[in-house]
Length: 368
Ligand SMILES: Nc1nc2c(ncn2[C@@H]2O[C@H](COP(=O)(O)OP(=O)(O)OP(=O)(O)O)[C@@H](O)[C@H]2O)c(=O)[nH]1
Ligand SMILES: [Mg+2]
Image: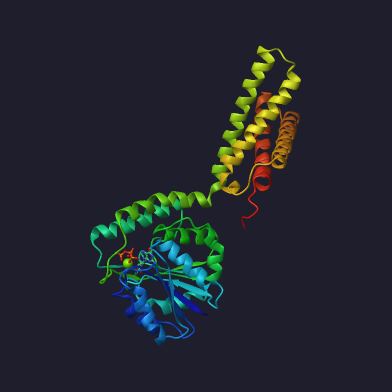
């Protein structure tokens, strides 16, 4: 398998040359290294360029104009290598925290897995040189993310990970929302959710000896908040359904208020009033669903008469299901009150309408 090691750098001049040489000692001849540098002021890129002649066709640099965070650097790295002959990608820090000696072990495991994670939080894994506080923060962060996301990976925050191309396809890199350090968590979570075969191997993580950490309190807090966003990108269905229900409830209120005004106060005939109220409520629902319940999928489509009409049609279908279910329950079961049957009917109608809305009316055609 052809391995591409991707190393993001920002001010790693003290480390990068030595790291590149060490990594080359541990990887097979068909492997390469790509350094993704965000225009480091210390001249990291120049240092890399100086050693490129030593490793022709094996060492590459991707120069980016400015510091844009770890996620952007890795995503750029993956896409740089996407059309090349690489089948396996390895993420690795430039500061020697990730010991290159583990790469052969990871390569062995990637034969039978789609993702191999260098893990500090399993047996025989660990951290060297970290203060008690830093260790506690890292472990706490991992545990917190595991609980919020319901993801069994023990080391969610670590950045020493190997991916088969197929795993990156399953993750759908275009869906990644993280910019900073939560990127690592998001990658693993999405790999897990998309059914990748994941293996954690123990690593001893060593604190950096040279250069400055880019980790800060702000970045850390950002990651804590991001976990919830990550969870939402993956589990929109329940949120969508709840919003859809609230929308339906608001539509019903609108319907009743207008019905009261026209039929009770102004004494109009209740049949045409009822039809009018239905259309107004459904129109309101249509816009609420478009801009709220399904806002995630409708971001790049506009409301249209055609979509509105199909939504009206499916609302009527929902109503038909409602009436049918209600009637069937009353006929077949000995219900104490008919409204109980109607409640089941409404629920069934709602579900049917939701499914049509989600899969047809508010579907994002460009989503894969
Ligand atoms: N290209 C690029 N690389 C970055 C950026 N931020 C961090 N890096 C690199 O990503 C790797 C991890 O960053 P570190 O500063 O070591 O962060 P850390 O490992 O979480 O923190 P320490 O444990 O204190 O080292 C290093 O190779 C950095 O040079 C960025 O914005 N752009
Ligand atoms: Mg580091």
